[in-house]
Length: 212
Image (cartoon, rainbow, N blue to C red; front, side, top):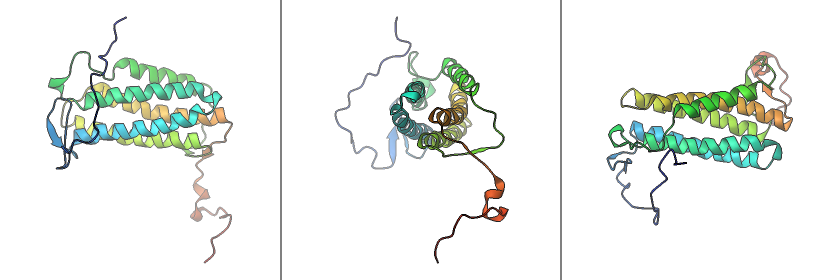
């Protein structure tokens, strides 16, 4: 079966080029733009998210019980790279078989969320990150994903952006929340629920003080 997207056609033989020393970088079509432009901020945030997903995948890969989650995270990394590809390309330079996000990726996230959520207990409060390392890492992924979503939404107000880009990041942020709870369940770790009165002003015992 013919691939849906074109395979990468590049050769990286030297990492530095010195072309970015003046604060500009190139889009996929060759256009030079400031490194702090909205488009660069958008796919830069997606790239940052991909790095954190890689960290969570590495953590999950060390536990056989997390194999299904590790496989999902690997796929998400490829999808995020596809998203970065389309964000790094102006609409007029997009090729028909260029890697991108489609409705299929969004539908897959929704199906996986529904499946995982069906095995999780109902929440009686908001949850705090922590309880296990992987849970915390997936919450970091969630918050970085929300920032990436904001960056892409801001770009979409000024320049053409595929609607699937924002939708995907929106679903993915939700998915990281579900996956964080799923990871806690698989690890047998208790979730930390938000308790407003646990704050210093809420009357909860502090559990100890630091020496003056």
